[in-house]
Image 1 (cartoon, rainbow, N blue to C red):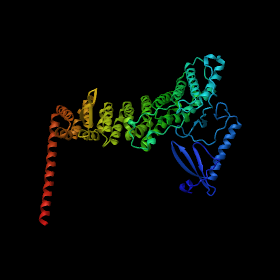
Image 2: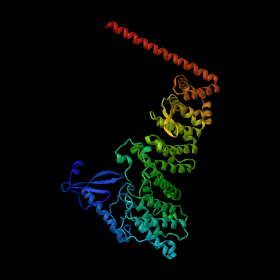
Image 3: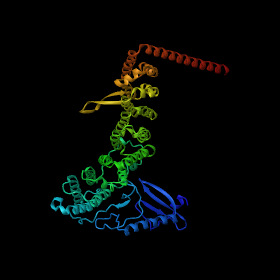
Image 4: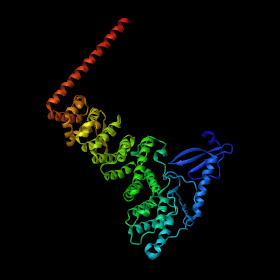
Length: 558
């Protein structure tokens, strides 16, 4: 059965429905289509009915077995803790559906109760110490309720009660003097956090407009209307992770690989406030839970791979790179092969996507950290930059030149010699770049219509600024016999014909610098350049002469 014929069937089986899985079948076929909604995409699988029934029955047997053992893994509404959740689980967070999956456990978000049914609870200081753990649990149960923030006038009282409960929970965890949280309450707290933060993210701005050419830098940042509650939930998680009272042996049972994977998925949120909290929390988890470190690095790798080779759309690349900057800074020497592969396969290819300007500062810091940790990687990094060097994007080329300067500052002479030939061939092309940018300055603040306009040669000027760096000049001076012949023609061309006066002045300074370094080498390069110019002029004259002869022969033959 093909997908088109199955899609035309009107029979939707009523006995198999799930927020993230739907089944389409027909009594006249032996197979059916399973639609799985993962990361805002629909994936279609064709499965034989017999096999599907076997899978469903197997899941039901496992669930009933756990129920028989008294292991309640469901987390229903606060009033019904023993409710059983669906046996079919899609283990994906963020945009995978409306449920949160905590360690293989389905944690359904609790819908808002009828207005007026939530009663405010006393504060912790108002009850005896012996009853605070029970009050802690009751506040967690209230915080599991979800509210609609699109309507600011709807259930205002209930929203305020939940906000107060969240604030008191944060103070309780942060103070530490009100008693250590029991293990069962820690589990319930992580479940409550999962219910609130692991949710379907709204469509990205380019998905709403249907345009793929929207500049991410020009987009207005999306601000989640439920942030008054989300902020406190994130603050509670952060305080729990950093608390000295938190036992990592117990906490890692609940902050497990599944939980960490969902945190990574949430980095695609368009709300910058949420990404900032996620960055801090994930960094703290990486520092405290050593068992999760390889998993976190691998998860970040996978996000980068998907961004580079599939989507080129992700909101949290900059924040993830900030975390990696701290991680790379702590790498032990000699560096593991795994980390070097991460540099080659993930970080260097991150120079390829178009929106690099959004995260280039963090990326450049990570790249430089690698070179400072292991100077032998300089050749790999520089050749990687040359591989992805932009051809027509002058703004991106300026970013590459800035990063190149930072890398060269940490480069030693031996590594410089390995890559200097292809490097200065590219720099020579940059020196002759005619790319420009129109800049304007307001003459009178009271009259914003009056501007002074100036044409700035972005790429050529930024390339010439490399000679302002003392370390780079020393490297060039040590290898001037190789460098000068490569770039001499570009320097002469700039002096003779470049349109920008600033570029002309900088080129003359660089030319004089080489003359002061080695007069004989400079004169030899000048002689070779004059010979090449004469040869080129002679070739051009011969070509023109041949065309004239052809034109004369053609006119005589006609």
